[in-house]
Length: 275
Image (cartoon, rainbow, N blue to C red; front, side, top):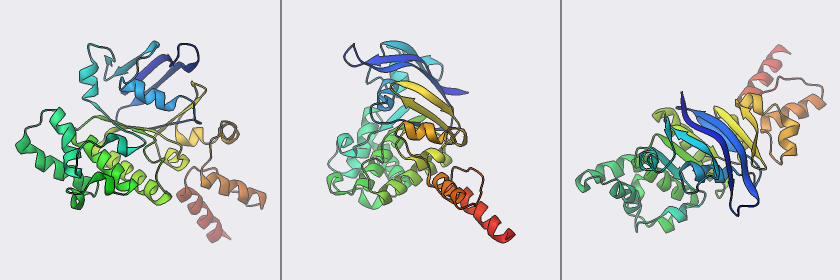
């Protein structure tokens, strides 16, 4: 079942230069979908259109069968949460607890119920000991954990991550990606991640590739990542496992194409035992 359906979406900021051109795709309920593309491909614009921060010039966005329009915008926004690239832009409260509480207040959650909810979701992102800390004094990874907790506390059905790890160091990026995958696995939420991280793409359920405002590839990771030359021509990377396969091929060692390091290591182990 489609949770999100985008049909013939077009958008321009200035009315002259198109950012999106006839973009169409669907996102299955409960799936982990990644949207990738080089800078300027339109992927973050898609995210803003899906939460109605921008209004499309033409085309239709449907969420749970409801058209994204004035009649349904409030109901749709109640179902969607978004985590942006820079968590500092999302902080409102003086403490972590205050920040998580902000969304609950907007949803008119009774004050007597808030503390339990704040502690529950701070615990889910491993930030319970920091409830009284100032958000500005946290590390980049900790700030994103707080932003994620604030979104989760509002209990959305869909979470959009708009390049949520792009400002983090490799360790912080790995930790947040692991957290997002854990949340998805445990909750069954529909996740849409706008990302440059090709390793995240390899572990998703569904991949949409944008170039110059158009969808150029759409499918499962193992299908998309086999288009190595096309991805490289689009200024995108390929997973290390595929780079390893190519390097081994040059040395006369053949392994099957795989999109994860786990798959590559398993094949190498089998070859070693066989020899």
